[in-house]
Image (cartoon, rainbow, N blue to C red; front, side, top):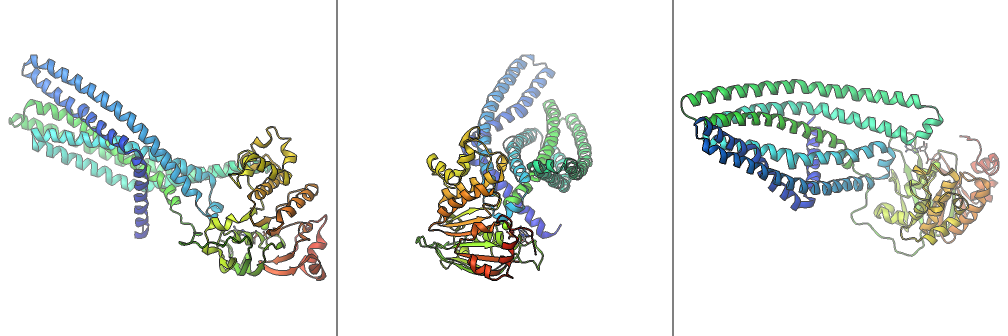
Length: 598
Ligand SMILES: Nc1ncnc2c1ncn2[C@@H]1O[C@H](COP(=O)(O)OP(=O)(O)O)[C@@H](O)[C@H]1O
Ligand SMILES: [Mg+2]
């Protein structure tokens, strides 16, 4: 592993601790109370009860039977003390854990939400959801480690060693050295095993992604009868996971056996040593008994400590990917000091020699090439061209979902990269080519554009976009849930909801990407009217498949392979009979762009 990845991994580990401790410290009082009760409880149970028992045994062996009763009473008192303190600790820690979980969940959700467009177009949503869930589970495990397991073992070891040292420093030293041997072996072997656990974690991420991807697109899978294909696909990912899981499991065996052998050796050495010390009269029989009582506990402790280490690794392994995802930098960011547009309401949009390459596209393939255009305030532009000519890319650049490779886009001479993204998108109503809806009610989907909008405003927008035509027939009207991503609505109905949403947003600039492509010509005629109303006094960029939709607009821009091929009004463009526009027009049947000719 290179030094750079090592450094990166250490940085991620630091970030995990930082995030989880912020979670733990959400309720500082509860956390403090938990430590203040659990530590004395553990000491009472694991250190002082054996100590009292050892004195009681000594009393029996030396035939001081009258002393046994009070010792027995002490055992009861200590046990009760343990119960009360432990219960208080559990209640407070529960409160703290819930608050921390909420905090961690919110952090990851907020972080993922703030990622840019590119992140979401590349991410597997199943995997993202699984990562968020994994982080929350890992936080709970981490919380248990730092508030329960680790303080418990520390208390047992430290108080146990202290009591032995008080009676016989030599025995304490030997106990300590034996434990250190067992532990360092365990730690060494587990750091070696971390690589296996990481691979398991990555593989289970892939499995979750495959399951998520296939199930999210369940309807597509069904329509192609590809259930078997998807199952085989998952089997392949699953077999990688099984292999890694098996390797990780096998890698635990030498470590576990080695540790057990070392622990047994340590116990044997301590037995012989305490017998020797008793024979020479250096220690009393209490200490011999105590050593036996403690050594069993301390050996058990090393197993628990090893378990802590194992669970710690698990937490780190499971958190690695989510934290890495949280750390993915956005390539689109707001400038440190965003500039504001003066609120004139008149916006001049300019594309200056805009060129864009998709990062994963062929070097020679330029989605938008040297595109220059000025759109005057309130001007309505139609954008046409064959599929793949760069129309959608251009709108995405304008919304700053991604940054131009070269050139610039300005609004009133202000580069959109110098503005806050929310300011740019705030003045644009955008209806994407394939509008996706939330699995929420129709009213909520429309109201999304303006959370302050009251129901009547939503209904008005719905009416203008002809949504009410089909809503009245739905079982619960505007309260009908639309199914995940809007699958319960037809394409045309989804588009109408998206148009209603844009109407409600009421922004000065309108960008429609084939917003009417899924409408039948009957409803399109109506929507056409609504759109015309919507476009009044606004700047509009309308991409349309159907040329009749844009033929009355102020100017029509014809794109070809990312470049501007023609600009003009419908009539001007038709004059050039060999131009693309005239060809498109001629190929239309019923107003559609027909066969693709490229
Ligand atoms: N996310 C992407 N990654 C790589 N290439 C893309 C991506 N999206 C679109 N393209 C390519 O960019 C070109 C323009 O696409 P697009 O703007 O969607 O065209 P249009 O909207 O005119 O049909 C096409 O060649 C397309 O394959
Ligand atoms: Mg497109």
